[in-house]
Amino acid sequence: MRRIAKFELVSETQFVKDFLDTFPEKTQREAEEAYAMLRLPGRATTGSAGYDYFSPVDFTLKPGETIKIPTGIRAKMEEDWVLCNFPRSGQGFKFRLQLNNTVGIIDSDYYFSDNEGHIMAKLTNDSNEGKVLSVKAGEGFMQGIFFPYGITEDDEADGIRNGGFGSTGGN
Image (cartoon, rainbow, N blue to C red):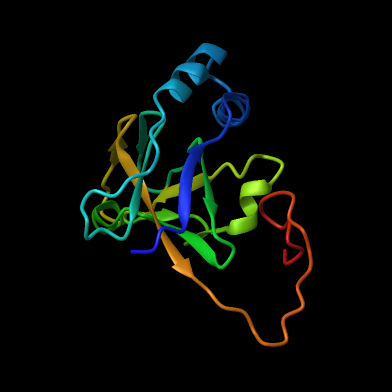
């Protein structure tokens, strides 16, 4: 197996800022405690392709509800790779848990973004069977898989990223 990436935590300052922006009812201390409990994504078995992300908070999603999760994670990877994030397959199957952007694409240059490349997940319980999803802090809720990618022979992209959505000019 080729080793092409490394997960890291964003700084505590960045996490606390994003956490309190997402959960304004929480306190600075609760944000700092959530940061102290963060775990880097990991694979469950040697045959697993996906790296499980672990929730920094307890959350419950009723059918139709949405939540944004600041993961506290960033990914440093080789230039010709991309990290694709998906719901964990069991949660997708049982609850129709979906990422609101269907697949979270993390480009290699996102690592250098002004938000430290902080990976966020926006999830919706799209259950049409009335199922309620509950996730405890420290439990897996999303998985990421690294993929190589290519570019066209006539590609002349020369932009530099500084942000997340829309920062590459493709809106």
